[in-house]
Length: 423
Image 1 (cartoon, rainbow, N blue to C red):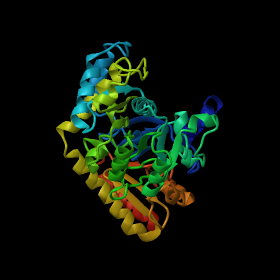
Image 2: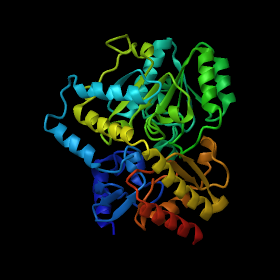
Image 3: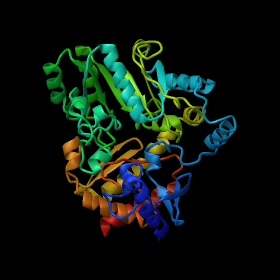
Image 4: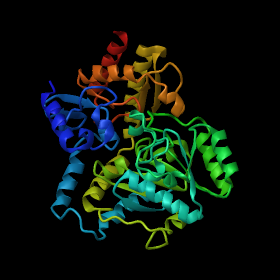
């Protein structure tokens, strides 16, 4: 039963646009109404009607340890006693920046912000200030937050609602945003050849995870590294999702390619609102007050978010075997899908990130992802939800694994997936 959730959703629609504070939560792509969550512990969500669900959304990524990890909760509770925010420096900002520099291969200096959108917006401003150029290249289907200049052929919720561009964004804001096709080297090369001295940066999700999980083809990230160097542009990895998830050093460690700038979010806050951007010291010294690129935030580096982030990263650092466990669990689900669905779906996996595309062809870019059968995904989603398994309420989002998922959870999930495809 989900009576209370339905009542809350109807009430929310009177006061909140669409009844939700982020579009994909509305269940518009899968039908029905969203489940309003009352609590979460380890790998489980409990909604306001008391329904318990195995959670494979994990707050869209940060729940790599599971919900309410006791060490993180204890540290956050202690920090709250000293105050929530000061608008002044704290020791914890320094400790988190030090951890980020230690763990992420390309980062020497970083700046904390309050969201992934803010991190990306700031990194692009730095790239433009550093290169003294205006244009950037992004890829169709890659989502980099909702700042005006990047809502061009975006993925995530924009793709789910069939609105790859947003109303309210003046054409002048996007005129310097050039769009290439993910995994298509020629599309990138053509843009550089057309504007060899105007492009400040290429920004990419090293593993695209906002049009569903789409993997970089062999050599694609290396190609981006080479062509940006050739033309004097910067390479920005948007690791808001992949950072600390694919490996302790993120996708750049996983694939062995170092960008000039990196944006982080999700896990770096341990479940609290936070983001970060960083890179080579020479580039980051452009940021005010060290340099002329202005960026500020009253809540940036607040002591509660930094506390959660520090403790989460320390746990990951102390137990690097977590990544083997995550990959093994994800592999078991992937195998179950492939065996049960055979050629009816495309299964993409990168570490503990998964996507099941309801299409018989390989998904390598925006067009092939968008060609998926969203109605079939909706049936799949609701079949699992009715059996206590919560996956992304959209074909174009990722499935996330956490260290809290048990072997029993994985076995049950695999059986339900088999049952769905065998019915």
